[in-house]
Length: 419
DNA sequence: TCTGGGGTCCTAGGACCC
DNA sequence: TCTGGGGTCCTAGGACCC
Picture 1: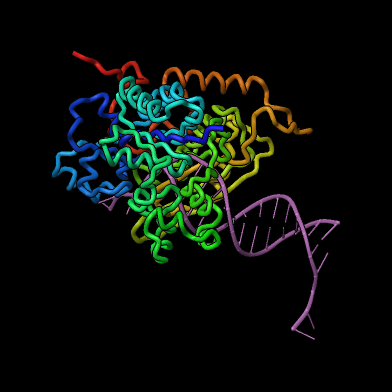
Picture 2: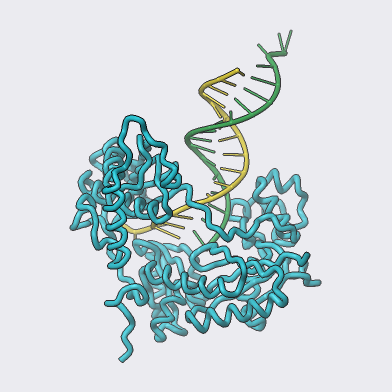
């Protein structure tokens, strides 16, 4: 039985790299990508990192600094990043028998049983680079947590050619001593603070901590992490993505909203998106929640609330869901506030064919299903929002404004033109 | 002072990830 | 003035049941 080999493939500065693929002028200059609503900095090129700009830092705080260094700054373009991600994953799937797409820019690979996993990883990395233009690093180890650490070394020490194997290294203690405990996968800011307070500063020290103590401080999750650091695999590769248990769509508004009419539009638009996501995974939802908030970081009157309904008939039918969402909104709306954000959450998610027929209600007519299928097909071919429900409005003053790059790979009218 | 025991389900809150 | 969005899991506590 060969020992298990996990690999983590991690794209470098993914969103920035996507932008650079389509505009060579962005190479070697500082580039940053902003979150929705242009609020935070969520992707940074190496040049931006060198300026000390943190991930998630509020844009307004660093705007001056970025301008001083002539940084190029983009709103996020998820159509582009999502499509590029699929291309990267497609290449990775050819390199390993089993692949778990962990996030938009990361995938775990099972390289168990492959004769020379490091060579295989090198080939995969080179092919990703060549076929998609995206640079990536790959780390190998006997557990996911160690593979993750290895991928950091792959990025940190370019001499290894972007691939680093931490399996069976005699200097593993030295390597783990170089890793700050807060950089271990699963150890967030709270746990880091607690561990530092107890004198544990490195991954090596965490690995050697007492089981009972770890479990008490960090729960069973933390103990799993410690086992993984010791080379005992506790987190299996999940090649088949389980259906989501909750589906959310929420946004901050471009401007403060005070009327229920505008909130109704926004909520209708969000619940429309939730319904699309439900149908995309062949699911229906039994529970719908709506929340609104005036959340600010400063002072002023604050109000936030949410309301949840259980649907008499679980569904993914947009008009029904809009109706329920509006009912929720009516329960919680209070005039006299400037709302900043709203969201819709679907839970109680089940496969669409698992509907429990209601004795007194007629089942979803097939015409309704056909309508939704048609709407989805049109929007898939012509772009999201080509056809939509009037309830989500046409003016959409609440929608944020942003300046993103072109959707080079998913829209004919935005394809890159070489002159 | 003593006050049954064991189980399930649900929810809220807190931690984590990208 | 300006601080994202979408997920996961665990734990503790309360309600309820026999």
